[in-house]
Image 1 (tube, protein in one colour):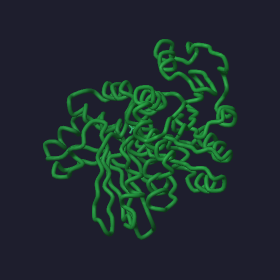
Image 2: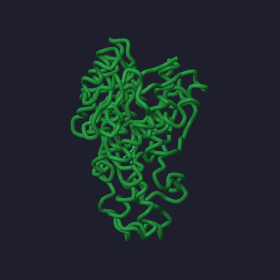
Image 3: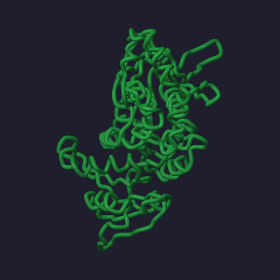
Length: 346
Ligand code: HSE
């Protein structure tokens, strides 16, 4: 069965998905019975394409690689250029909108309005954009229910490591008592590279080059990204709607090589730890750098890898470890959601 996708936002993550579909689309169709056809891409910087017959994904990738935009994509009969995000969502006949614009930590826009528009037209949404899910999950969930659409967002936490799906399906029946882990790949990568002797700025530049960092890397190094992921876990897994004020936050910006060396001498490694715990005043969260003892498995998580432990009332602690960022990994998160949409599973 064919599923038509329209991509809104064509940065690292959207390109990651298109690369996967270009390379493995036929194999995915054989395995899952679903053919994913990209009919439209729109991006405020790179331009926009719409072809009701489906875009040639190799041509799309070549155009971006060679010219940094979609302008070099060859003309063909029926091809339309230049539609903005809202026209693309409304008028392309796509079954599913892949929302992969940047995460805005202030108000979730423009991603939030993209998701609202798509759901209210009865279109499914898959997204890696943390803003809408962190800030407006309840509203969006109800909107999806009202219009018979589905909203999937596996890549918002731990990129292609399916931690949200594990919580909602494999751990079903447990009460989740809390979570603790490393949820930002960029800051963990920076801490790891600083331990190798690299200065902070050089380590951040590497993380940006590797496609780990947010459009505005302040989000990563000052803890906002991990804070947003905790909001998403609270909203979607722990069933509590929290605001940013419920999650205390610090980052890693002022950690020095001396701090790292001292921690090492004390048998620890600095990590940016994100946690949610029930307290007397309800569910509260915390994002903070901590020297983690080498005896704690989290101290061994290096590079852009993430880890998250769910404290469960029945199964005890369950930990998932895997990629927390990356072009193909996060593109894969979108693919998982598309496949599960096609299978009508969570
Ligand atoms: N910038 C994020 C990180 C990407 O480094 O973890 C994945 O959300």
